[in-house]
Image 1 (cartoon, helix red, strand yellow):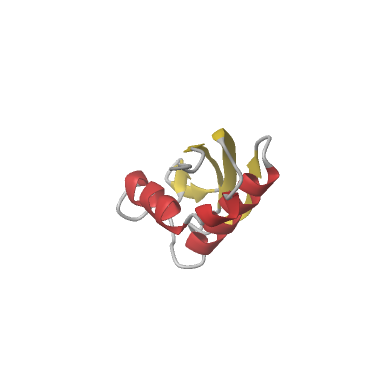
Image 2 (cartoon, rainbow, N blue to C red):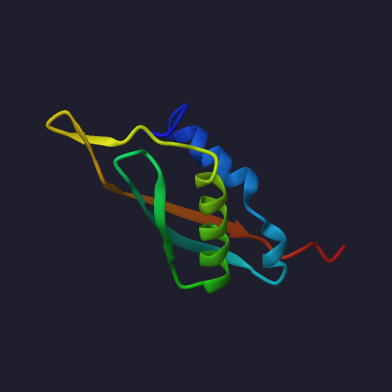
Length: 100
């Protein structure tokens, strides 16, 4: 569990995402972010998989940035903390700039 819940995590991702790197992008872009949450609640091994490499790298950058300052409540099995693979789908819609 992320401190203050999953919506707080999503807000941090959204607020730290640099959309300026997508100046020529149009349409819907998707990726899935995978990260390991270790038994101490630290995020490790951040990987984004999608068809747009720029979007993938920016998603990875943002999650790594967040991971530096936040510790999750780790998953438990039989009452003991364990590693957990966390998956977050991410989708953004880019529109062409107005020509007016």
